[in-house]
Length: 237
Ligand code: ADP
Ligand code: ADP
Image 1 (cartoon, protein in one colour):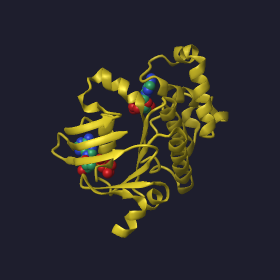
Image 2 (cartoon, helix red, strand yellow):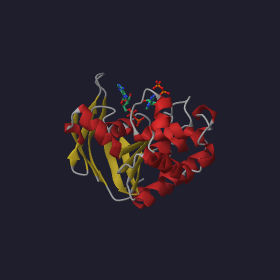
Image 3 (cartoon, protein in one colour):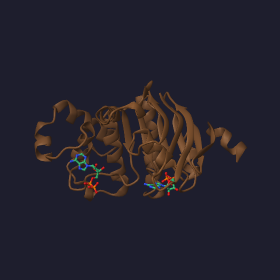
Image 4 (cartoon, protein in one colour):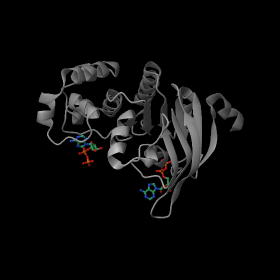
């Protein structure tokens, strides 16, 4: 379970991107965060895993306040948080399999050694997940040989292989065409259900959010202006 309590982020520029957001996400909820560009969606997600340092407030993951952790403790805690990025953040010169395996590690400097020394059970787990995302036959292709939709599926596999207790996706469909966007949303929601973990997906396309999410968080100028079941969104619109 993830809980944010009065989460606030003021950048050094003085921009207040997130202005005290309190919410709880649990079970296998599919939560879409919507709002116009600049609303603070990306900042909110990045404050959860402290890719951006929150200015104030708490982020509780399964009871533990992440904002209180030292850097090395936070590094360990990040293993529980699967992150999917808009621009995939793959390492282009590495293969699909290597990119997925990197989710089991953190930062690695020597990939040849990495590949040789990887525990077989990790490789097996990575292969299973590549099957789930439909890329098992592409494990040896380099990331830079893939289409956008395929790259994002590698990004999802990398997030899932670390066996997180929550998934965060920051505009995972914004760089994709409509067909690939639907495929990625279907995959993310299926994974949350199958693994029984919640997911927060930032999305600026409201119809896509409404189609797939159980619950909507509406952000505007850093404030949570809507937090409820997707079915209630129309009534308030
Ligand atoms: P969204 O994801 O909804 O588009 P962002 O979280 O990216 O919103 O941005 C929210 C606000 O914070 C915007 O005003 C943006 O300009 C500002 N912002 C985002 N990142 C930074 C940064 N690194 N430094 C300063 N201001 C930032
Ligand atoms: P950049 O150097 O511009 O960030 P890269 O393609 O090198 O671009 O890296 C893309 C992403 O992959 C980044 O998020 C980075 O943290 C991660 N990354 C890069 N190299 C490694 C590595 N050796 N092990 C694990 N992750 C890496």
